[in-house]
Image (spheres, protein in one colour):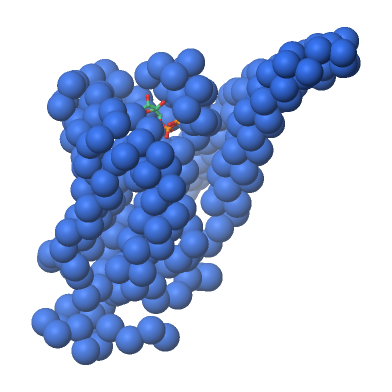
Length: 270
Ligand code: ADP
């Protein structure tokens, strides 16, 4: 009887082991697929500006005696190379995020500093469309993480709010802290997103209107970067939106413990 028990247990262990391997295998295949998809997408995205620059260079060469044409082609080359640079920058950012270990390399970060830096850096694009950036609320809250990454994430949200809103509107940036979470929201009076698009906008290279995104300097990676940064910080990003009315993107991050005193006296930087 003892032998049977041993055999059964051995069979169970073997089965578990095989399942474990199979599981690993699935995970491995899935990761590979995601990687291959990403490489395919990146190659496709890079080909567009690189191809355009190459064609424009040819056109430039053959129009040396037409100063107007030279100016026109040079301007377009500049635009395409700016797009290429933005794309490369975002790809580097995404791969940096994959290797980042915020839990180990982080520091206490003041959320108000993150907001003011992101707002400062988005001021120029906002002014170019006469969009007012309005900051409301305050939180005596520290979060644990990488300040630069958090500024990048918030900036992506503010830049999108500007990019997908008409001129002469407002973009609100709200900060509040509740139940151990700090929330920063970015609200625009822009075109909004349909429920179907809301489900997909955080995917890499997903754009509602690719031509529009390209034209306004988008790379299709902005929200994917936001999602990665925030989940690396143990937080989440949510979206509320209505077509024709506008959108609110909200980042929620866990507050560092011992920071929720009313006057913020304990919120010193380490
Ligand atoms: P992109 O570089 O194209 O802006 P993102 O990943 O940042 O890429 O955003 C993906 C898509 O989501 C955009 O192309 C746009 O269609 C949509 N989107 C993002 N933010 C907003 C917003 N605030 N209002 C409306 N649409 C938005």
